[in-house]
Length: 305
Length: 305
Image (cartoon, rainbow over the protein chains, first blue to last red):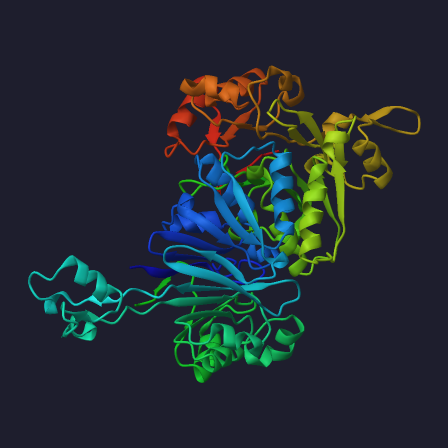
């Protein structure tokens, strides 16, 4: 089963050095989630061979333009390409007015419905549940309202070990195995121990997305132990004061969060336009947390079960 | 002196086949005018080596997204790159609210002033005059309010023919020549005929931009005899009915307008996403008006004096 993060853009503020602003697609089995949507995201989806009308849910972390200016264009193209099915957008509440104002003045009536969930007006952090996973939000520490997103696969079923299964094993008993039960005969005598005929459930994967934030250890309990963490790393550590003033992080700080949260892998991104070369940012993160990697447009990361 | 049109995008509606939505830069001497601003225009300006803060004036023809969705990103990047000088935007009036709403929710206070001129609220068609040229608008026939733009160099001065100028010719008499006067001596006797010492003024160049419009002969008197006409050609002639219904033109119709207006050169663009190959559109325009060319992203056209 697929759990794949595609990077569509990983620069901050403005495009530079062939890097575009933030956008990612998380594919979990046949579901496609778009996370942030910088200008030109629709073009980069096309290059990454992500069909735009496969996107079911969009998550916008905050209303700085480098995280959403591509949304109105994407919605317009979805309309042009004949989308009929609903689109769910999780975003700060003013975004609905911004989208609707632009649709109004182009006299566009969409062929599909947008269901908005205003993440800045929710008391609860639970956003979404489908057959395979849940999505929650958590607060980030930025200049304006900003939210992280946590995608977690649900616990998976016990697997039947077919090579150990006796011939003529009954369907009723198979059901019991799947529930984790041992198998008894009519006289309540143990015939098979569950563990002898099954394999443990596959690992439930998780991804935490921290778009724009200053160094803040409050997120550590929330993202504890995730398989993959994306954490912004706008600056190198010589710019730590500027990072703090602008509510951003250094690559070293991203590494520290990953280490303290005991995540398996760290992706850094949201690079400042001042950096042509990204290797110093990577080395800085790795000096704290060796399993650090650069988010590079066009690349993807598969999280294994 | 430069009179150069750079094509930054020439597709309609959505990006397709490496073609982006409408945007152009007209350079007249040291002035840079941006005409329409589809999504991702800032990126294509960078590729075309147009410095974004050299843009002094922006002209937005209408509020369909493929003509302006890149504007808020461009303004944001101008701000990020330290622009201090005013930016003049000529546009339909709702655009100010659209821009301001997005700036408000990102809590951005621009370091420069935007002077809006609302072209939909003007009685007069005159937009702008500088040392070298004038800009006027004219109505196009589209589904929503839409304006064309006409850039005209002002009449140029008589040129002194230095090879014919006698030695010790006085500065006072030079001034008279420049005014087109003949030179007389103190007894009012003709010494030099103006035409013998001067060359005629250089040609004043002109460019007419017709972004989105159905075939409409009403524009012919306005654009009569321009050096360069850009006229949309969304469809081939087999789609004439669809062109008419959607208030667009066919390539043949663009050619007919160019021919009837006796323009020197026609650029077609605003290609529908249905066309991978543009040659049929070009051939269709050329069958009516041989001096037809395709507007291709990254290319430019120099208009000679």
